[in-house]
Length: 166
Image (cartoon, rainbow, N blue to C red; front, side, top):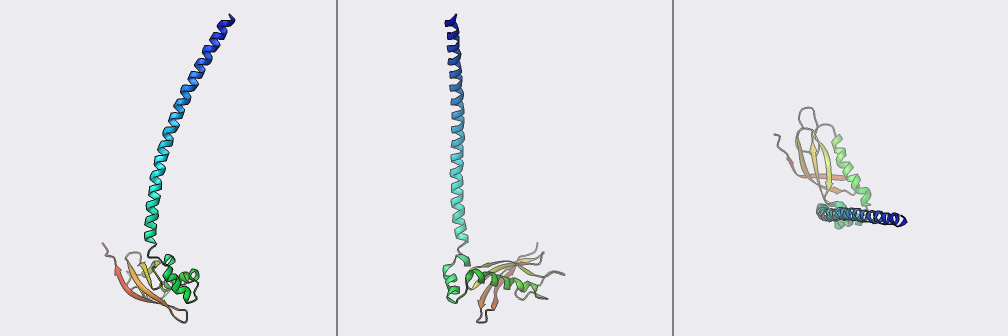
């Protein structure tokens, strides 16, 4: 009788071990499949990140904050560039507050509105591009600027266009 109990226990233990082995193997294969998918997804995302970094570096090409020659131009005149860039942009935005027609935007606004400069991008130590709108019409302008000896910023309109209204 004792032998039969041991035999049954041995068979039960063997079946339990076999069940554990099969279950562990299935879980292991499932986890390996998930890991392979994640590795593939990670590689795809790494490629996307690399292409986005390349695109960002191209976008930064015409940007005052990344242009060492333009920054040196200001630094050689004794300006702190981190303080100067916001001042120049603020001076341009202050022109939005002038009563009547905008002093730089050469287009008239629609009824009861005013053309205002919305976004400013400083390309280098001499050029700025900006967009403007009155809420109905919009366009872009290309400006030159200079800082006078009195530390005033003077803007000069070079080119502008108004998008057609459809």
